Length: 188
View (spheres, rainbow, N blue to C red):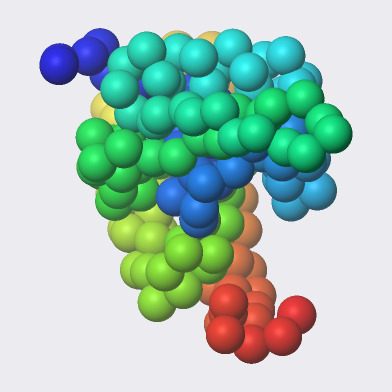
């Protein structure tokens, strides 16, 4: 079954990533998201259930009823092979060069790298640094070709250049912090 691609800033990826860590119920996914990534993703429980239904419809996850003694049954969700492949493909791509994409998408990728495959974290940061440096070089070249009298074009581009410079500083900070972050094998 071929499905439409998920946008890279889609909350569907964060749920795929949480399920890549193991099967979970919708409520558990909401709790994990709220505790670990609330400053990155702000999703209500109803949004999470809607996204889970979409992911199941696309064949990326499967849900099964789990009976409970003296409590209502719950639905336990797990990744399918297609969901795992989708998640891994997303994990290996650099984020677009916007503040929002870096804050949401890159930070989410870094979180999952540390949770699932810690040795991938520095590789993700290095890839994003290279992508950002390339983007900064392209913008600097573009800026040098804009005539001085086109002040608003130059100002708009100058803001983007400064944003990418700030992102590079932040990525350097990420490298330093991640190098001392405990992996899944070490206590927090």
